[in-house]
Image 1 (cartoon, rainbow, N blue to C red):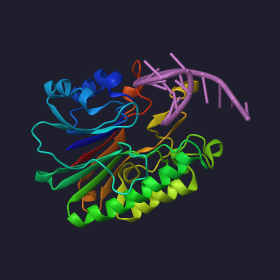
Image 2: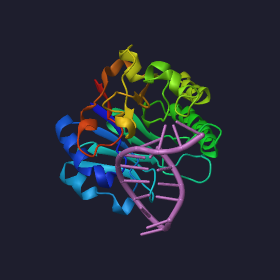
Image 3: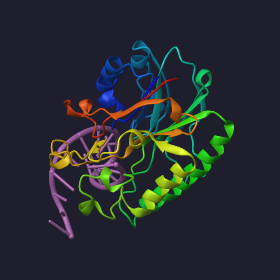
Length: 260
DNA sequence: ATGGTAGGCCCCCTA
């Protein structure tokens, strides 16, 4: 089973890239973030013609998440709001159960946080607190649990192209990293880091300053596996190829192959 | 200290 997470920065603009990617990569389940569209404008038809069904939670202008799954798989929506999330409510979580695999997939778009000491930063931390409570409870179900998405957190300095320049900034700050570690300590493993020790592998590069060409990036998109899932992990990687296309998303897809 | 680019939208906001 192939599972991927991709912040597409507008599904309207990126639809051709996403459809091509599904065709080429044969991904079974693709979590999307930053749809930037309402549910009624989501391109269900195009995905359906490509052989995929979609569960989505959109909103106007910003945010929005979806899980795109091969039609043969039965998927049940568990939740599309995060209980206890701060106001204003935003579309940042979709929780889907795949009953046959006893696998639950949480697809997230964690708030960016804008700047340390801003209201948006506090929003991010509060949102993450609500997430921890939610995940803690979700674990009681006994199903395999996979948490993926744009976390907007680079867990370690080796996930940052220039740690000195980024020190203390949003996406790398200590309080954000503590959030990420608290999530791991609930019993999850960063799939990529589990299989790769090396730094300098990134999932996001700013559109500005030719950051991608200079590999000035951060690893902020992750796929976390519950303890029960870890034995099934075969491969974890980041696919930079879509980032090289014309009009790319600023994020690359992150993937895992599970022996499920 | 700021700007650079991209996307959406109602001419600025978010990333």
